[in-house]
Length: 572
Ligand SMILES: Nc1nc2c(c(=O)[nH]1)N[C@H]1C(S)=C(S)[C@@H](COP(=O)(O)O)O[C@H]1N2
Ligand SMILES: [Mo]
Image (tube, rainbow, N blue to C red; front, side, top):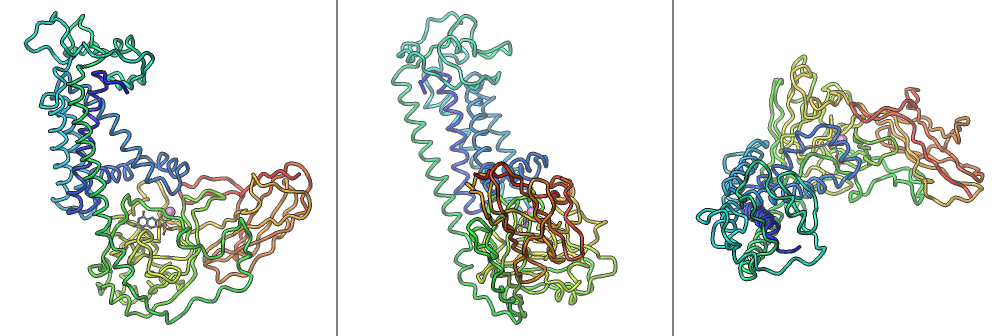
């Protein structure tokens, strides 16, 4: 990028923004990672973006949607900061006002998060203040390009002779400069387009007839770029250092220190043959490291088990409060439960099966004695996220757990450490509260949990579904016997039958592998005598109530996708 005044102005804006964000991080080490402006604003975005956009992000980026959001936010911020730099050269106050506006946004975002206190405003305030200082230093202070060739003529008359700044070296022919102008122009190249990008009728300070020079004086440029280098470096050091420090304040050590009790009721052994162990088939028990993760938390909540409390309150006769030690002292059960996300597309992989250790929620509800009509239990996470579960479901005898263990270990931090809910038969968004700190008894009429006002159904029983894991569309298949296999689920009802068909022909019964319980998925397989050509494979499951999965295709919103998983393959 050549050192045209425009590029330098944009660079000044970006550097100011980098300093603002970098300086806020170490402050957020004290006030908590969610008060860091980038994360706080990103969190606000997560909460307010329209549902289709969010769904699009999950579709495109999958589990990386959060990284995509943070990178996207940072890129957008850089573009706006560059624009502010360009504006600041003409009117410093516009640049400063822009920084003030972003500071206000950062403060508002930090203060409106669940559990925020006044100190959470500090990272944005400190960052914004330093960012403003840096912008001033570049535009009108000690690091100023001397003088900004296209800054408003103050003393000099409009017809003043070109300043020394115009004497710089010409831009290399054909070099392009990213001009983010007030009219939103894109990348443009060469001197002529620089003229086009000159101020419009809004009348910034460039005098008529005075062309902005393409290069600034070398010594002025050197000082400026040295300033950029030093400040950007400092921002990177404080930003990354602060981020690292904040991470060290996490709870991974506390998690490793947790000794899980043995269950009074162990999980049934996985029957021989439950796992067909085929290369492309999802294993019966999902390894914790490969378990899908879905939540609204941009930074994973770090909940100290020492200070963790669970309040069970609301419309109950005997509210109680439990510490982590209280919970661990209770009789624990261990169960396999397959957890599924309502956002799972037909054929998708937002589903996993794990062995959970925990206290039956039913027993806790018996103790608090819910009042008549308290038909909803709202699980509330430390970060304010909520889900609403029917009280009746939690008390109907199924293994709904306040879980502390997953696959024989304390819950991973990103899966809800120290305590989460797991309810067989319900999608995660209405039942699987991670980092849970409250169970509040209320009614569906009185309270809408997080996803309900965002267009999702208040009731979220898991729909019967089935998936073909092998073969996959791009597999090389040779004619002859081919094993078609996958998983099917209808949690808490159980899968009684899986059928496969080829090219819309008759449905054929697949073989069901044994499974632990009705609360988990089941593997299935079917031997296909494949003939050369293009073929379409489809699968459907029937649950133990006798209801067969519908072929009608419906989207994930509002209460889970329907339709048959369909796979196109080529046989040679
Ligand atoms: N605190 C909190 N808990 C949450 C969520 C969330 O956004 N925040 N998402 C829910 C959803 S939509 C699902 S599908 C499950 C996913 O659990 P997992 O990430 O452990 O797979 O968590 C549920 N629990
Ligand atoms: Mo979900």
